Structure formats: structure tokens, C-alpha cells
Length: 367
Ligand SMILES: NC(=O)c1ccc[n+]([C@@H]2O[C@H](COP(=O)([O-])OP(=O)(O)OC[C@H]3O[C@@H](n4cnc5c(N)ncnc54)[C@H](O)[C@@H]3O)[C@@H](O)[C@H]2O)c1
Image 1 (cartoon, rainbow, N blue to C red):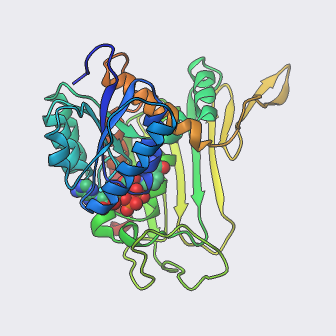
Image 2 (cartoon, helix red, strand yellow; image 1 turned 90 degrees about the vertical axis):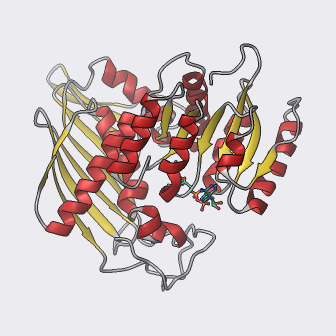
Image 3 (tube, rainbow, N blue to C red; image 1 turned 180 degrees about the horizontal axis):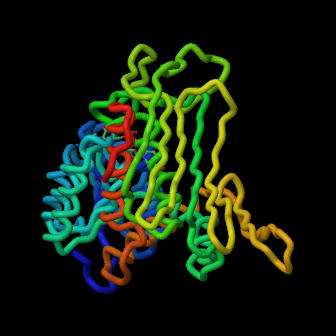
């Protein structure tokens, strides 16, 4: 459903939790979008979000009926005014909800990780192939202004072929608990949660090469460090200190067709300093996207750093989410293909799954 020309596209959001707020807030600021309904299995949460965004629309001077609240995605999809959908549920229902959205002919913006397993991710890819709708994966970091600037440099050839990348996201006591800490729902810990953002970014800047071999490792020696009370952390609504079935650290060496290599490490719990880093090493130049966008090159036989003057050299969540939502609107309208298609969601799930398999078997996995 690409929507009627001239009228804003009717938006439905499935899942009314934390990330839904970022989607809803950005739709509210896109003049081509009109938020029609929010669905949550916890109806009171859907009602609260619907009231919140009805009020925001009024504040922003948008002339629209109140946002509706429903208790399931099937009810939301029965609403003919809903023309495109954000899937903001827990990881265990991304695939089933997205497949239903696509089967109804609508486009879906599916939060990351696109799915927990390769089979679930393949079901989304197959459903998209049979649908008039398109999929965009919630790789919001790709849309951050610092990433967009670096992509322009990389696409213009400033890095040359990127043959090595390092992606790091280390928390010292940052296991959010609740469903995030329940492997049966989340599919895993820091690797599938935050690691998937960094894996995806590195892979995207490397030119989306096909992974051919993965050597991974995981550790669960520290648990959720629920004993640490001197540091605040983000906790999911159903945080329970006694429950945790996910790894607390994961890492991998991923080899790609053509010889490029990615080194990834991520943690929820670690005795050490929190770190965020994304470094790319190419034949013509290098770059750090995080912690601060910097390029490295050679000029007149001298090694040179290039520091782009931009509003933020680090991940900037507000414009990143707005850009992501605006990009999804254009993709759902059929105006341009998304920069984060379902195939890219599937590739990350393939690699993440191979890291867990490699860690469990203690051997390299060939893909
Ligand atoms: N892009 C990012 O940086 C980012 C950040 C945080 C979370 N996320 C992703 O967003 C998703 C949601 O995370 P969250 O932090 O908002 O979780 P959350 O627990 O705050 O919210 C999830 C909501 O989904 C509802 N829900 C569960 N199953 C449902 C179903 N079948 N139909 C309708 N509603 C359902 C729950 O009741 C809950 O309200 C996860 O996949 C997570 O990985 C992405």
C-alpha cells in the first residue's frame, strides 16, 4: 500500500514500548505521515501511547483524528487507514508480525535484529518478495549524520577497498534484564542486541561483502552484575536481578569473500572501561566513525587526519531516528529503495547465528 497521492500515509505501530516512542515521535514530525493506531498486547500501554501522540499531534498543529489503541497487530491490520507499519515488538515476534504486515500488502519498518534466527529472517524476505510492501530494517545508526557523511566519503572512493574493520561496543554493567536477558525471547545477549548495530555498520561500510567464515566466542562468567548499585543502568520494565540466560560478552572474527576481515567485540558485563568504536581500514584511507568521525590518509608523503566539521561527530539519536523514519516513508511510498533492506537484515542474522554456533562448538563455521 503506497497510500493516496496528496494525503499523508497512515501509520500503525505494533509494540508500544521504549523504542516505539522514537518511531512515533519521528512520524509525528514527518508531514507525509499520520499516526493512525498503536497496537500492544498490553492494551493499557497502547492506550497510553495513543493518548501521548494524540496530544503531540495537537501540540504540533496537526489536524487529525485521535490515535487509536488496539490489543493486537491483527486488529491494527484490519484498519484500512493503516497503510504502513513499524514493528517495535520484542525480538521473538518480529518475524510473525512482519510477515502478516507484508501479507496485507503493507510496508514494514522492522526493528533490529530483524529476527532471532535465519529461518525467521528468511520468512520475512520471502514474504516481502510476495508482497507489494517493502521492508526496512531498524539500523538507525546508518542514518546518523556522522554515518551519512562517512558513507559519502566511502562511496566517493576515499577509503578504497576496506579490507579490515574493528567494531567494539563494551558495557561494564549494562544488561537491561527482562526479556532482553531471556534467550528464548531475545535470541541472545549483547551480540544480537547492540552488537548487531556495530556488525551491520562495519559490514555496510565494507561494501556488504558475503561472509564466508566465522570464528566466535562468548562468555557468561560475570552474569548480569546485578550486584552493582553504584552505577545506574537502563533496566527493562520487567527487570529481575535473579534472571539471566544470555552471554555477557561475545566476540568474533568474520572473514568475507575477497579476503576482508571484521573483528567484533561486545559486552553487557565486563571488568573494564565502557568503549564504543568503529574503525575501518582501507587501501586508500582509514576512518573512525565512533567514538568521533575522523578520516586518515596520506598527503605529500605525510600521514594526515581529516576532521569533518559536522554538527555531531558521534552517533546522534534524534536526527538519526528522524532520517530513518523519513527514509522509510520514501521507501513505503515507492519513491526510492531503502538503504537498509531485508537482505541486509538477513545477512546480519546469518553472521550472528554463526558466531553463536562457533562459540558453542569451539570451531570456525564456514558459511
Ligand atoms: N534501534 C535501536 O537502537 C533500538 C533500541 C532499543 C530497542 N530496539 C529494539 O526494539 C524492539 C523493542 O524493544 P523495546 O526496548 O521497545 O522493548 P519494550 O519491552 O519496551 O517494548 C516492547 C513492547 O512490545 C509489546 N509486545 C510484545 N509482543 C507483542 C505483540 N505480539 N504484539 C504487540 N505488542 C507486543 C510489549 O507488550 C511491549 O510493550 C526490540 O526488538 C529491540 O531490539 C532497538
